[in-house]
Image (tube, rainbow, N blue to C red; front, side):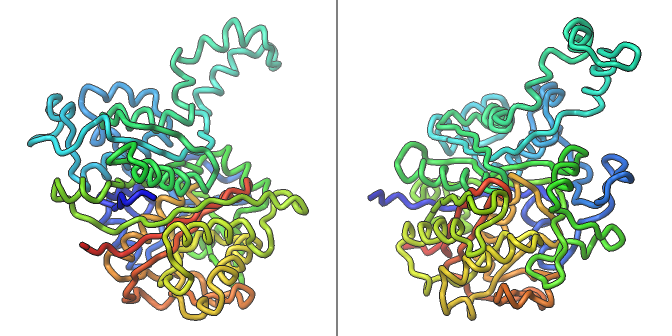
Length: 446
């Protein structure tokens, strides 16, 4: 068994509630909501017209001057990841020799690029509809689309590099180029479970000695027409357009659905001795990871009513950490306001923690953020790390009255001081059956 310990030394949240640790954490403690009527396009013909959007996202601040032309082939999801990477690397104060030579950072190098890995979760990147629509229109004759005209004229109205904006591995591609990460790299596309699976893989990469530092997490934008259509047809969205700040109500007895959003986060995981050697600030330690799957054949597309897959993932994570349910001081829940999924998740917590569920506080941050797809887990993970680091749990507003069928001790009455030694964070794909659990421990210098 590996004795290499893995710590968190950098956090890069990019969310509707704020970009960067300070803005994000303060918004959570204040119980702010960023859900509003969508402005990126006119949602008037949709039953759901609200979401969580990020204002003033500037890619120019996150990449070297000589790389800014590449922004032309970055879809919104890629921009989110690149900005998150910038925040995480800056927060961790990482410096590679190559970036120093390019005069992007100053001072001596404090890491080896060949030992710098990346694992980033990605979603179903939406095509740029105005750009695609113009090309499709040029392939019509008398109002009819033809493949002949598409091949002869339509495709010529797209830039030759058009496809590079929408490949899921492009998030990791741009991040590793900008930050000179030459170690093991991987992209994970498992819906809302992607970030946790990516962080778990980065954790494994470091513990087995294949890297000393990894940048990991995920990002996705669901505030686009195609995502709104898909989620709406699936019956997953709240239609409370008149009260957007109360539309997302995780675990509440009167919850009516999820809310689409955009955002994500990347974090820096680092081998402990490597972090100590460069004098890094340490937020917390990752000590366990577990994954599971439950397709629930009896009802495809629905979660198992007893939370079978979630329970498997969390038990594996606790076993990996060498812990028992009695060691868990905080549950960082994933719930996004869907009746069946929230109950299934709560059932998994009761199954794993047993009688302890009555005493363990449950944190949830989706009410003010919505569902960020592949980026949701990373945002939840960052919030859990900060809760452990600051011994404070932000309020899970919009969750009262709590559904008695869930039977959870929600933290709802403002921020609460809680001495957290171990937090259990869960994420899962709403439609794919993938589950992942991570165990975070308060850092102890021993």
